[in-house]
Amino acid sequence: MKKRIIFVSLFIICIAILIFYYSTYIQINAEEKEHKVYKIGVLTVTDERLVKVEGMYEGLKQYGFSEDNVDIIIKNASGDVEILDQLAQELVDVGVDTIVTTGTSETAAAKKATMNKEINKEIPVAFIGVGCTVELGFVEGNISTACNITGVDSHYVQLSGKRLEFLKRLVPDTEKVLVLYNPETTPFGPSSEFLYDAAEKLSIQLHIVPVTNQKEVVEVLNEKSDYVDGVMLMCSLLFESMLDSIVEITLENQVPVMGITDRQVEKGVLAFYGSTSQNEGVQAARIVANMLKGQDPRIIPIESPERLELYINVDTARQLGVDIETTKMPFVDHFVHNSER
Image 1 (cartoon, one colour):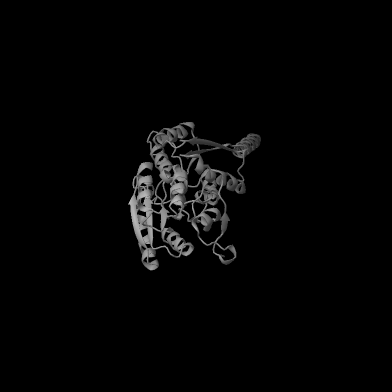
Image 2 (image 1 turned 90 degrees about the horizontal axis):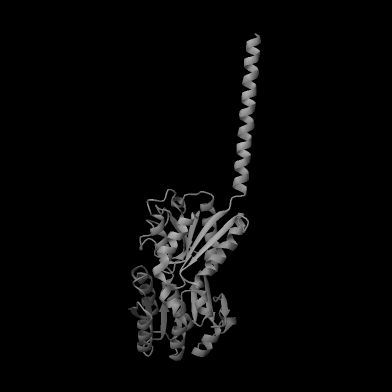
């Protein structure tokens, strides 16, 4: 009987010790989790796209992330696409918890770096405002990406026809439109169906011209400006890098331009319709937050823009002789003026 009592007592003591150590373990892990600093790697090719990152950071605050528990490491190629692979690999080597990309070239570099088989842990990638991700082979589908990449789609492909419609609405005499795209970074095919369909309904003749460098852009604009009534820019770093020249040439030739971002409107382009870089960043924060909490990007669907807006540059409209009456244009979300260039 005495031995039995001793055995029971020892058993109870062991259980108590186990409970104590388990509770301590849980508490330590909870404290570590609470004080964990998440590393977010950002890959961008230009300063212009950092507004997306600013939006993402603001959005993360809604999900409990702040400077106390988030360390954002930015790798900026400053316009040099050739070094993006190197910068992406540097983020991988640092051991970031996720990589955020701000464009097509950045996403391609991030995918290449994170597919390295030597990496023990697959790093999730969230893109902000990129289109054609399926066509470019980044993901297999919009619902299930089947890889470590997901994000917020800009829908610039699907909105191509709508942009053409707004250009016609702002400049009713528009009959011929020059469409510029860079085939080396963004395929025209996905957008063609939407553009041709809109052009037919609006009785607009499209002049679609591929350009791969600044010299070609300048030559095409100078050559075609006398024959077209408007210009549509497709998504490309090429146009971002030489926007001042595009604005100067088109204003000189009195040709309105439908741009691809709200920032382009602030720099002198007549109009833009779509999701702003800031809004895309805020929206992407939800995806990034879920990734940091351990959610598999394969089961995070690619999101469509939550908010679409029409921007008009009043100063440019006046220079082009385009009649802009704010009181009669309730469909315009923002009337802006030129920023300092």
